[in-house]
Length: 503
Image (tube, rainbow, N blue to C red; front, side, top):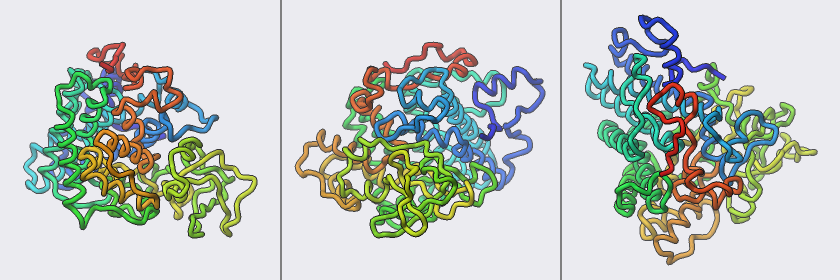
């Protein structure tokens, strides 16, 4: 586990309190010696992107997005707080949610530094707009993750450089956070061009995230989700805004983004610039330390005593994978067997329960503990180093945002294209808007499984407790948000000790 070299609000407060105030806090750039050249600006921006790669934040995609839901669970002997997420017993002292919270703010602070200092620099306008636009996207990305996970949280739009700045005020309500996210993304959209670069955000990424933000707002109000009931927004008008931005992504960049009709190719680690990938993390097995490369496959793949495993596909081809997997993330049997049609390629090609040797012979006795996914496999791994990456925003995700937001007329062809790619029949025709939207949410469950979206779809539709067995004893209000970590509460007097965002 790498130690962070920049400060969260809590860590900043602790370090600054115990150190000489004359020292420049470790992890902060000085405006006197940085941000002078385009290379400086790029370095600062990469520093902001790098926050996504911290282990606790990267793995939080699944810890937060999937483990508490009906699609995944951790192996029984996995140590630590992961079982608190699985069993819905998270509290303010749960370490995994504290790490997630902390690294969101690390990303925000780094983005704030770029926005302020590059935004006020004398760099060439084209460079300045591009760098600041990407930083605005990153700030919005981190706040969107925070507000969906914790609800009302502190707002900071200035880089931290003193003790006083580590105690940012709590947003007055959820809407204030969303308005900042929307403002940032609209500014990013204006500053950025459609320029697909592996690991970077562009205009399409800003529009895609805006569509997800508006869909979250619209559906949360529509379904009466906790924290959103008192928002003064019209859900249908907000669905229309979600559709407006999703439509731009789906229709405006056919040479850059689109459906990949080869389902397995979407998850080919050697094709991160495929048409589906709107925003994908920049990591590669050639990196020198974790964060530059990932160990994601080890989380999903079974252990075969370090002997490489092989996954067999329906056409008989074999895919090599790490044989020293930890098998932490397992897929619920019921999710596989009761959610997918038996012929759905998203089940037959991407979910497995057996492994093979290099000759295609099934390994027996099998070390596999349960179903696992092949969405995260690098056949060219180097030891534990892989190029497997989380899929942060996919084209199919935004096509489903458009379908849900716009309704049956525009939505049927999009959903049916995704189902056809999976080799299954089209949706039942003639559904009304409400029924169609529920069908699209179910399609998201199948298409985006194990990609970190599931919990947020359940929360925005107020269906956590009716879907997840482990959460059945809770109310939807109790399941709506996790508490802000106690360590942050202790160091920020603006955060109440009994923070409850479900209002």
